[in-house]
Image (tube, rainbow, N blue to C red):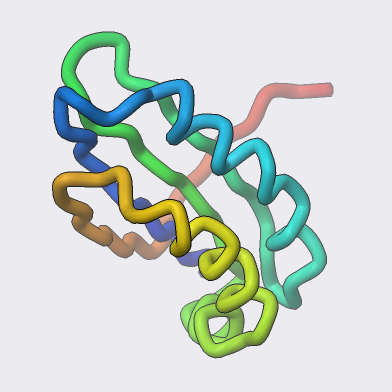
Length: 104
């Protein structure tokens, strides 16, 4: 079963949403080559201040391997010097037990 990891990131009022989104755009593709990676989505709130960073992995093991990888460190270090934007962050993990997709 796949693993979905959601990072719920709350931005303080003073933080620029555009800057937050730009940071993610600048790192585009850094996770795509990771073993077991299946999907990424950055979800902008239509009300409120909590963004959701959605990733999907083949297994918990492949996600943990990504977290320990040099690619993960490099992707996050690039923006560390600019300082954090979030007021708080919460990580949620879910096992996919059922899924349906659009016919293509």
